[in-house]
Length: 379
Image 1 (cartoon, rainbow, N blue to C red):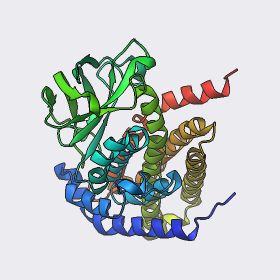
Image 2: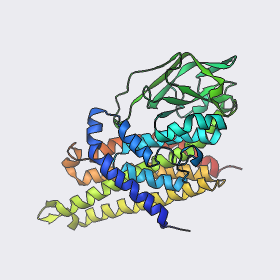
Image 3: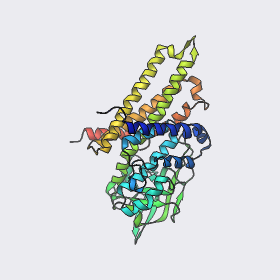
Image 4: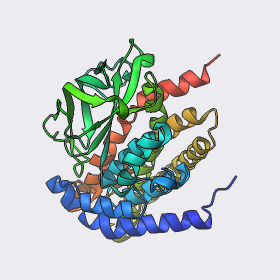
């Protein structure tokens, strides 16, 4: 067991922390206030290798492991959780093409995705198919060398802005075996988008429905074989869950540090907050819970890299614990700030709004419990 980062990992962490402090944190509040999507800064991140973290090097990826990805996303999230989370989604979509695409598809799409000359979205959720992803109803019917798509995808990060959409669609029978994966390009005939959603958090990234009305997509844009889509989606989500858990840890770590500094400075009843044992204990529990969640997340990342048979189980456990812990630590840090924590003059309320959705997306935490219990009770 290796609990400390090695020299290369420590350098990766330091570089991501430096970028977060220099390019994300100073603008995070403004991006949140105005709903600005910082494409220029995302492309700077891509220049550091953060747009293809575990994509292979021959197409411009960094070819790092899932543990390194978790280290990077935790560091970036401390600067701007919303922007770090969008990078996570872009990475997940790019990895699907790298892992399951054919050589021509990899060469066609990934060099530009790794530079973020192209921006990618992942489209699984539908208005009538959220947690029950296998019931998705967006239909793709083969017509010669094309598929004709009809249906809708909901809550899509990058919707209306991204250049490519990695979409799970139904090409066959009901259930997971009838789902295929298609790459839909922006500008495709019959592709349109709903209004930009007004969200509680994640305001530095656009979110909209993706709509297909007799949308024509070439068969050459199918990733994998017909019927492979659900497998691709679930394997992608194993990594996505770790990344979003890491984003929760990054936000929580930033808020823990803010709370620690505030407790040293703020005085009430003639004493610093840091001198009240009840508040000392609260801070101790926050730090302990955060460290425990990080250890589980790093273990799950190591298992995913090793293709361990229980990797999906550990990814679900780590996502559940990290996102619940992350929200709880941020919430307690806000509480320690009292009324000031509720003001937009302080970043606590923004971190709280941003991490709340992590308990819902990439599989709601209730579904993580379903996965965990199913694996534990498997005959």
